[in-house]
Image 1 (cartoon, rainbow, N blue to C red):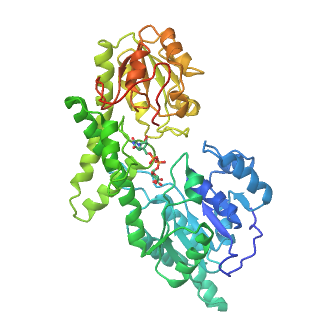
Image 2 (cartoon, rainbow, N blue to C red):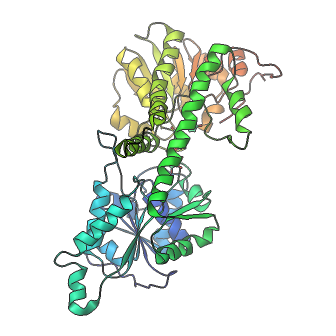
Image 3 (spheres, rainbow, N blue to C red):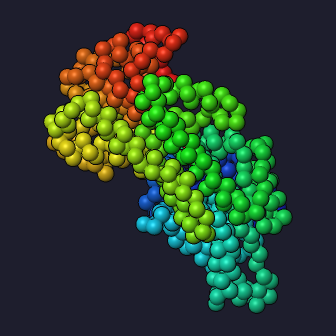
Length: 478
Ligand code: UGA
C-alpha cells in the first residue's frame, strides 16, 4: 500500500496524528482527537479489523462510538489504515495504543510496544513525538527511546538520511496515560478529571499542551517515569478501594450492618470520596487484574515489598468463592438445579467479558451439574464464543427468559435495565424464587416483600432504623 497523502505540517496545531492500535483505547482516542478537529490516521496491523472499522463497525460495543465513527469517516478527519509503516510516516504525533497483555509471571508483555518502536525507527522521515497511551510500567519510555535510537542507526535508517545530507532526524518520547473507562470512554475522553503528560523536552510539552487545550482540563506535567507510575498507581488504588469495601461487606454480614450505608457514611468524607465503594463480586475487566499484577511485579523487580497489593488481589480472587457459597447456602445441592444468570459482561455498558468475574462464578455450578440460563444485553455473542450453548447452557433473549423454571436467579452485572424488572412476573416464572444479588441494586425489603428469598452482598436480613420499603417498586442504587 502506498503512503497516505497527509501533508506534514510542523506547526503544532496542524500536525497529522497517527494512532497505532484500534482497540478499546485506540479507537475512542482517535475519534476523540478527530472530533477536536485534528486529522487522524488510525492504524492496526489486523487488516480484518481495519476493514470492519472502515465499514463503520467498531468491532466492540462502546456507547456513542458507532455514531462518532460514522461522522469522522464521512468528514475524512479519521482514516483507518492497515499499513502501519505508512501510517507512521504520515503522522508527526504518534499515539501508541497497542495491547500490553500479561505474561505468566504477571509482568506486562511489551512485545507490541517494542515492535512499534522498531517501525517508528525505520520510518523516521521527520520530527515525531511518540506518545505512550497504553498502560506500561515505569521506564518503558526510556526503553522506547533507546530502541528507536538503536534501530534508526541501522542501514537504511535516518542516519543514512543524515549522511546523505538530509540532517539528523529528531524525535521525542512522551507518556500520556489514558484513564478512560470502558462504557464511558468518550465521556472520559472529552471530560477527563486530569490529563497527565510525562515529557522530557520542552517541545513535547508544548505539543501535548496544545493538543489538549480545547478540553480545558487540568494538566499534570511530569517526567515520563512519573507519568507511567501515575497510571499504575491510579488503577492499583481504585482496585484497593474495591477490595477494602468488599472486606467491609463480609464483616457487615457478620455483625448485622449494611455495607451500602457504611460506604455512604465513609464516602461523604471528602478525603475518602464516594466512588469505587460498591461492594459485590469484585473487579474484573482487561485493566485492573492485569495492571495490578504488573504493578506488583514492577515493585518486586525493584526490591520494594508492596505486599499490600498482593492482599488486594487475594481479596478480589476470593470474591468468587464468597458468592458461590451464597448460592450453595441458598440451594443446598447444586446438581440439576436451574440457575438464571443476569449479566455476563465484566461491568454494565460493555460487551467485554475479559476477566469477567461473572464467568468465573458460573464455572463451579456448571461443573457441579447446574443448568444455566444466561442473559446479558450486550455480551452474549462474546460469551457464546467462549462458552458454546449446550444441554447445560442456554442463551436467553431476556431476563424473564433466563428466570424461566429457575431455582435461583443470579444478578452478576449491574445493567440499569435489571433494576426495572417486574419482580412479580419474575417470581411467577420461577420454580423457587431465590435471588442471589452480586451487585446490590435492589432494596432488600422490596425484593423480600415481592416474595423472594433474597441474598445480597454485605446486607444481612435486617430492618435498618428509619428505612421503609415500597412494595411494587425497586429502589435502585446503581
Ligand atoms: C479502569 C479504570 O477505571 C480507568 O480509569 C482506566 O483507564 C482503565 O481501567 C484502564 O486502565 O484502561 P475499566 O476497566 O473500564 O476502567 O472499568 P471500571 O469502571 O474501573 O471497573 C473495573 C471493575 O471494577 C469492574 O468489574 C467493576 O464492576 C468493578 N467495580 C467498580 C466494583 O466492583 N466496585 C466499584 O465500586 C467500582
